[in-house]
Structure formats: C-alpha cells, structure tokens
Amino acid sequence: LAAARRAWATPATPPPVPRRAVVPVWRRPWVVLGGDTFAGDVLRRLGVANLYADDAERYPRPDLDALRAREPDLVVLPDEPYAFTTADGPEAFPGTPCALVSGRHLTWYGPSLAEAPRLLAAQLADPVTHPA
Image 1 (tube, rainbow, N blue to C red):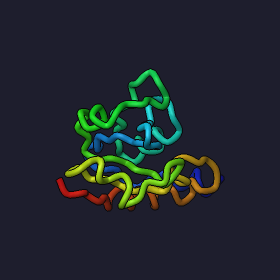
Image 2 (cartoon, one colour):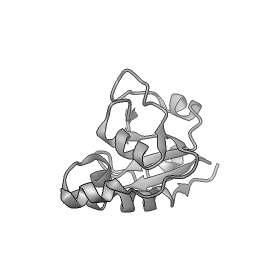
Image 3 (spheres, rainbow, N blue to C red):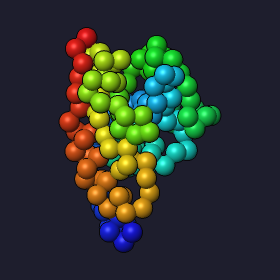
C-alpha cells in the first residue's frame, strides 16, 4: 500500500483537456459508472471526465442511444466485471475511440493500485476505433 500511495502521489500527467467519457461496466443491459464510485475517482485522477458523474445513480442503465447521445470523446471499456474486448464493445460506438482497460486496476483497491496509474494511463492513451 505504501507503493500505491507513492504511485498516486505523482500520477501520470493527464491530458491538458480532460477527455469526456462514458464508462460501461456491463452490457445487456448497458450499465455505466455514475457518480460517487471508486473507478470514477481513479479515472478523474487520470484526466477522464465521466459524463455520468452527476447522475443520481451510482450505476445508471441508459440504453445505447442515450450513451451515444452524450457524444463522448472516449469510451472506457474495462475487462471486468463484463469482459469487453476488441471484438465485443467498440463496435457499439463506431467512430468513437474506445480504451480497453484492466478492470482490476480500475476497480480494485489495494496492491494493484501501485501499478494502476502507469498501466491505465498507457491503456487510455492507446484506444481502438471501430469504423463508422
């Protein structure tokens, strides 16, 4: 935990303008990160503004059209609890960059936080885009 404290004391430099993102954590039905979540705080520290952060629900269930209507700059797709992959997730958001990230590093507190800033920053910086 001391290593995690050190890692987050000087996290990766976020982009100058936060990327506006939706963060699905489940599919069928779609469930996204809302406000007051650990993962939302992790992303905020890495320069990602959750477009559902002000939602009254911690895990809203918008339909796909509502997700797209938020016009995110980025879709963050963790590999847990739902296992989003390059073949399952980005196709729902054609033309929008999708960052496939480690769910463990995004949602678990504890020792994995020591490497989370470096790993997640790299994954957020390397999104895939499904053709429109």
